[in-house]
Length: 404
Image (tube, rainbow, N blue to C red; front, side):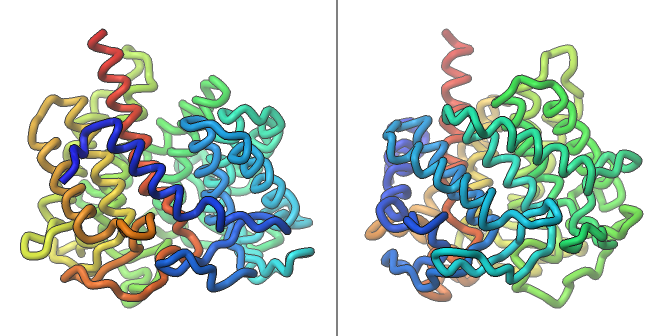
């Protein structure tokens, strides 16, 4: 096993993952390809999903910032242009899914999702940090769109989806708000504007304190229009990757990571005392309920009774969890979090990382067998895996700076 805590290892792993996509993901006619087999073969050249379109922009912006290369910055601009042309809709939203024939886009799903706009905001923030100044206008426009169409000030949270003509539906979810929190932190990093940081804190408090108090002290996924928990939404559907039923181990650890990052951004007098204890509680519960002692790795989700409801091993769950473990270890000094970090990485290294072709397998059975040869369908892009490595690197660098 390599030294998973080494910055050199993390940088090398990011580059190994990038190598799977670079040279084959960019579509010269517009945007990026979104569907890849294990060996890198593109198996759908036309379907474009808003989540992948934004995450590829994030990937290239982060790679440019860390490793340089004018081609990466060109790819950032290329991807941003596709968002503003192919995905953009006459009513002011961005289409969730389109068919791209190389010249024009045909809308396959025009639903406006707050989840999607959160990633549009995230992409613009990272493009701005990658030196593309024209992204500032798009960042502001996305903030205003979220504010106008989805923000519910009485609840301190965003609504979830709307029709193409902006009729907001009754469903409410934590997932869109979690990624909006992530995007707001990035927007603050890009602009220094305090409204973004304040909004991130409001979202975090609303979900991890008020809403969690309605759901046994943990993050439940689904809610009604009045933000009361909906315990049955998607109960029988294990295929919905954006709205899964149950307590999600990966979302508990992802929130733990975000709470620690939020704390690090806030001036000490403004830091709520609940940030670190909540992060620890979420992570510890995820590991207690979700760790598979027979086969290793974190299961996808568990029910209100505490029992596993989906034992599959998803790539992003392991990645977000090792990032949270590292930040908890650095913040608290508790060695058990480094142990968890090493165990999560060891599992991923053995079972989820494709050492031959690069990138991670998307999902394994509970006993760690591959389900298909579709390594990266729409929505994946390894944003989670590379992003988690960047998160750990930033944590390590901050800790080193603090010791200097």
